[in-house]
Image (cartoon, rainbow, N blue to C red; front, side, top):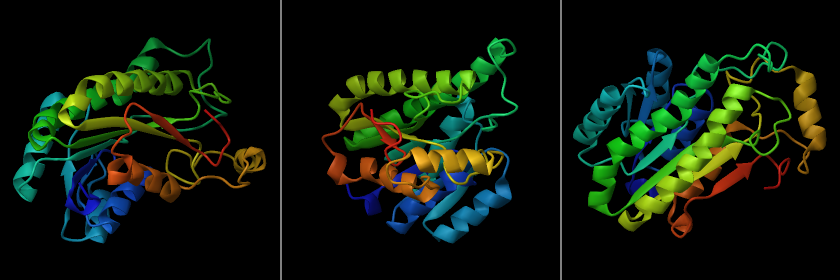
Amino acid sequence: MEIKDQVVLVTGASRGLGAEIAKAFGREGARVIVNYYQSEQKAQEVAQSIGDHAIAVQADITDKEQVQNMFGQAEQHFGQAVTTVVNNALVNFKFDAVNKKDAKTIAWEDYDTQLEGSVKASLHTTQAAHEGMSRLKFGRIINIGTNLVQNPVVPYHDYNTGKAALIGFTRSMARELGVNGITVNMVSGGLLQTTDASASTPDEVFELIKESTPLQRVTTPGELADAVLFFASPWSRAVTGQNLVVDGGLVMD
């Protein structure tokens, strides 16, 4: 299915990387659901920038009932089931290497928050999308990860662990859902310049990444969004269960 024929849900799409992903799909002609939790005005602005083939829908992705309602609202609005899900939302986390919790201060509740934001939320959207995708014999589920799983240069213990678990979720779902024409993949970026989550990162860190990266620059949200498009496009039709690291070659997995 061409991207222009898809109905795409992007979670956490009111700002940052999620907004760039939503706009990238909109640019290619897809119908887009801009999911948000609190930032209604920003979500509406993203939807308006895409045009009349986008809507903003509020839902807490860790709440199964709210997710189910969001899918129902999207299908009713566009007259077609959601074909593509991008699990992008980042729950209660900022990339602050200076003030992060260390091994002595990290609490299980911190892990729990990130596991719910990564795995539980992705489970909810996958389950909500399953019936419609199976009916169409087509589906694309794209999870957003991090290269810190392969190279934890900054030990964000809770965040890194949540994304590591998401890799396992991605591969397990890919194995089961492939028979229904559904692919499940992951796109893992490095520190992006710049999103709300990375805004507190010192310039020195960005410069260090630039110097250590083969391409000699820091990856942007727009560049990662383009890689997400690949997994939704017909060009990736034989690819599932994979984790593509998009960071300019900093981590070669």
